[in-house]
Image 1 (tube, rainbow, N blue to C red):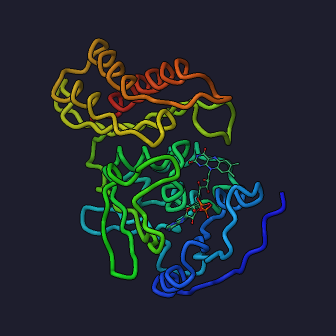
Image 2 (cartoon, rainbow, N blue to C red):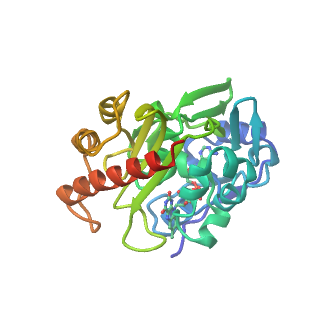
Image 3 (tube, rainbow, N blue to C red):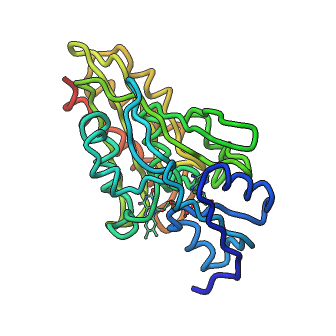
Length: 287
Ligand SMILES: Cc1cc2nc3c(=O)[nH]c(=O)nc-3n(C[C@H](O)[C@H](O)[C@H](O)COP(=O)(O)OP(=O)(O)OC[C@H]3O[C@@H](n4cnc5c(N)ncnc54)[C@H](O)[C@@H]3O)c2cc1C
C-alpha cells in the first residue's frame, strides 16, 4: 500500500519530458494514467526515484483523422476511446473492446499508450493493435520513429521502447465500410484481465475471407499475432471446418503461463474457443 519516496516532475511538452528522461536515466519512469505503475510501486515491485508525469502535455491527447488513418494520442484515456465519434464510425472494435478493460474509474485514468507501453501480456490493447494493423510513433532525443504493433512486444514487460523514448501516438488505418470485427475476452469477473482473448478484423468478398488479422491476449509472454491461423482462413470460403482448422493453428502458438486463471491446457483451449467466437462474430458483421 505504501510506495517508496520519489521526486515528482511535471514537463509541459514532449521535448521537455525527453530531456528529463535523458538526464535522470534509469532512475526515472514516465507516469501516465498510473493504473499499472502506481499499483506496482505500492507493492514495491517498482521503485523509481523519479516520476515524470506526462498528464499535462496536451499534444499527447486526442483522436483525429489523417487521410485514411486514425491517430490517437498516447495519453488518450479508455473512456475517451469509448465516447469517440471517429472511433465509433471508423474503428468500432476499439470502442467495444475498451468497455471490457478494467472498470469506469480505471478507464478515466488508464491511457491507451500506457496500456501498450507497459508490455503486460494480460493487457488488451496489444492484441487489438495487432488486429488493427496499428503502428506506434516513438519520440526520443534523436527524433521520431514508427514501429509496427507486430514488432513492438519483445517479452513480458519488455518492448522496443528505449529508456529515453516516449510513445507519442498510435496510428491505424480506418476500417473500410463492411469490415467485420470482434474482441472476445474470457474473464473471471468484470474488471479482471483476460484468461484468454482474441481480436479479429476481417473482410469478405462473396463467401470468401479476403482479409483477416488476428491478435491473441494473455496466452503467451506477449500478445501474439496468429499469422498461421490467418493463412488457413485467407481466400477460403467461410465454414465450420476452416474455422476449426484455423483455431487449431492459433492454439499451436499459445504458450500461456500457469496461474490462478488456469493451467496451460485450459488457457490454450480457451484461446481456441475465444478465437472461434471472435471469427464467427467478425464474419457475421462483414458486409
Ligand atoms: C483494477 C484494474 C483492472 C485492470 N484491468 C485491465 C484490463 O482488463 N485490461 C487491460 O488492458 N488493462 C487493465 N488494467 C490496466 C490499466 O488499464 C492500466 O491503466 C494500463 O495498463 C496502463 O496504462 P496507464 O496509462 O495507467 O499507464 P501507467 O501505469 O502510468 O504506466 C505503465 C507503464 O507504461 C509506461 N508508459 C506509460 N505511458 C507511456 C508513454 N506514452 N510512452 C512510454 N512509456 C509509457 C510507464 O512509464 C509505465 O512503465 C487494469 C488496471 C486496474 C487497476
